[in-house]
Length: 172
Image (cartoon, rainbow, N blue to C red):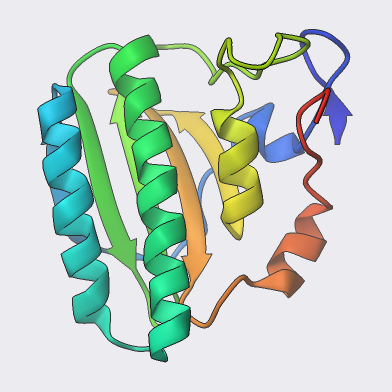
């Protein structure tokens, strides 16, 4: 953990610097993202794609779908609001987990809330870090990538413990 850039908030290291996702994931599908209408369609289709994976029990699958769709909604909304087009949402999977990768062409890090009052935004990356088993961002030659990993068999507590506990945002 490191001190945040604003307000002294503590944030996971993966959110502070270039952090590429784990290797071994294969792309399942990708969606172009330009408008909030695209986001609504992506959420529906993502839910269907996760259901088609069918690798886990019903209760775990519902939890996985809920967490992934919520995180994609948050990351995609951030790309629309704060990023630069074009934006893309990708779903990647391996045998034990899925990974979502949201890209835009902004050349700056995701912004953390710091000491911002509740209701003024900036808490999405904290939410993402709490719901996912791994999270990070990086820049490549074409885009900024913000990604989140989710284990098929429920939250990967060993992976989360290795990254350190994820604190809530200041004031919560």
